[in-house]
Length: 76
Image (cartoon, rainbow, N blue to C red; front, top):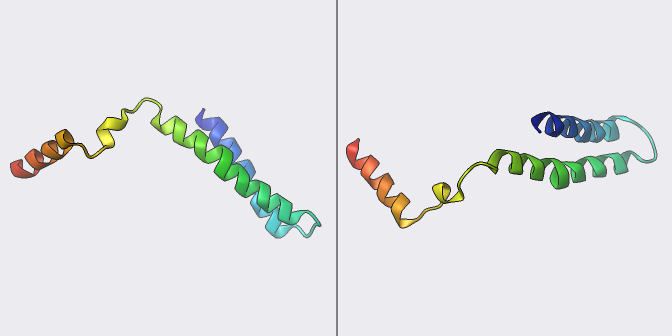
């Protein structure tokens, strides 16, 4: 999965660079497709890949988590 994300990232980034450096009539479309590819394909895939095995409750500020943080601070 990470290789697919890397390949898609490089393709989108390459499209953006090609749009900037090539003097063609569709260079703005290359930039646009590259940016859309990053935000609609690469970023969601990356987010899913990084968060698929994690529990969201560990990262929320609940009463239990706040109490754990306070206990850790008291130990220091």
